[in-house]
Image (cartoon, rainbow, N blue to C red; front, side, top):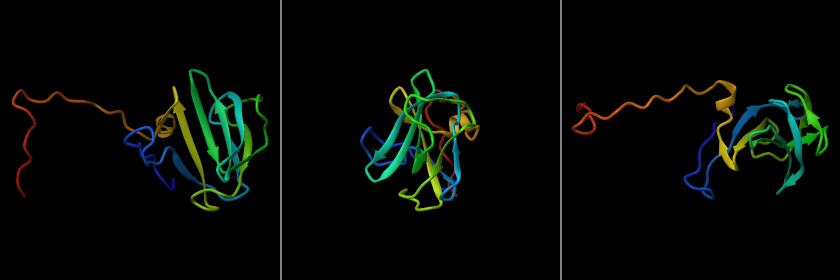
Length: 133
């Protein structure tokens, strides 16, 4: 991975709404799960491909020249395009974003790269102070 997910502070704030995966121009891009292609086109200056996976879950890839068309059903692992140029990490990566219910979430949640968070209760007196060093 070249660049990690960085959640924005608010819907329109700065952040990195996906992860950047090492990939060179011309490398194949595969669907992460079964779905239906919902968008093939340009966003700003780069080619983008989006796939609806059900339960209001959408994955997007850029820059990708699609080898599929809007409305096509795709299977997990199927080649859906090739890495193109025009990404913010020029010719060395592909950006992979995931939205659930319209909100960007880390793709690592689906790739097994995040440990499950465990919340612990605070002691009755409040936070435990850290010892001075």
